[in-house]
View 1 (cartoon, rainbow, N blue to C red):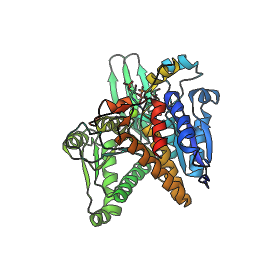
View 2 (cartoon, rainbow, N blue to C red):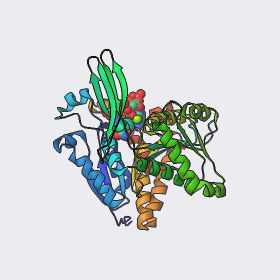
View 3 (cartoon, protein in one colour):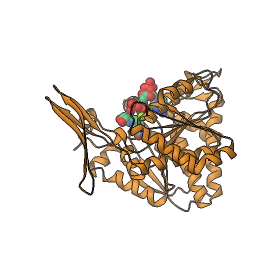
View 4 (tube, protein in one colour):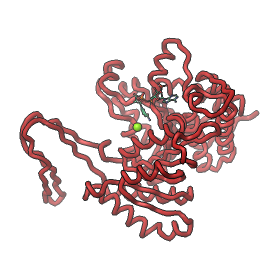
Length: 398
Ligand code: NAP
Ligand code: MG
């Protein structure tokens, strides 16, 4: 059988720990036998990031801008423990943060639903997509620890030399400070990405923020969403018979829990970080969630929503058997291959990606699954397989 040919390379961002192990297995067992895989490879493993003073991360993001589609493996965001563990020169920043800052855009995360895995929120009948703003707020913050009394100000010096200045707090003793920002431009493209995605998926769009407390910052998000909606999307939404709904973030959370799902939930950066973990876990597992970053200029980066599964990796290193779920990483690849195929007009690549997704879901629905899913499935006669065993079963179902 001749292999499927690719026209434009995918930007491939390799990563760390257990997901790096899975990454290679997916390529070997599920992709390379069928596709003449063309990728521009960037090793975002922590060792390489340290060797290159993290330049490799920036290079990979720029390559994504150039080619338009990337697929990324989970990566370690170093903390003090990791600096010691890997003997790092510096506590490098989160690669996802760096990539998102370069590409801008919005991250859409949707649970992968499959027969036999019921959401633990009983009334949720349809997947809930989280649309996470991927720029700014605390992910681009400046923080200070102050060790004694004094006054803190928020100040802005315009290009014309004009200064706006507000007192934040008069400290009597030690404390902490944080400065965050966002830009109208990024919020506008976030809003457009959400409205466009809602139209393309024919799903309602909900957005929550805290504009009662944050009367300038969060209020600006609300106002921009309102303006973009009124000027560009209201009529299109009416035609498509879908709605846009804004409310306070806490009210949205309460309503989501009581809903039957099916909406796109636009979240500010931090809300999206937190809520996507809640939604994915409630739908089954962190490993059953797709994630794609869509930039305003139409660049796509696909990844799994979970981390590097460190605990499993140490078991793997100790020679013990692991049962790590590879579904989200498989879907990162299929999402990227499908999009590459659509953009290049390579129908065979699109069909291959769809076939691989079907084979993955069929494997689970037949009762063959990793431990995380076996613990929550409603199916009887389940066969729990190890990391490699699951990928072999998917390959057999292809
Ligand atoms: P994690 O890797 O998502 O894993 C947390 C726990 O969730 C695991 O210990 C495991 O539970 C379960 N889990 C997650 N993915 C699973 C899978 N595919 N199959 C089965 N179980 C799965 O989060 P973490 O341990 O907090 O973070 C580890 C590293 O990942 C950190 O260095 C962090 O910086 C990084 N991280 C990267 C990304 C990214 O690149 N997108 C995102 C988040 C975190 P059990 O141990 O109970 O089996
Ligand atoms: Mg997170």
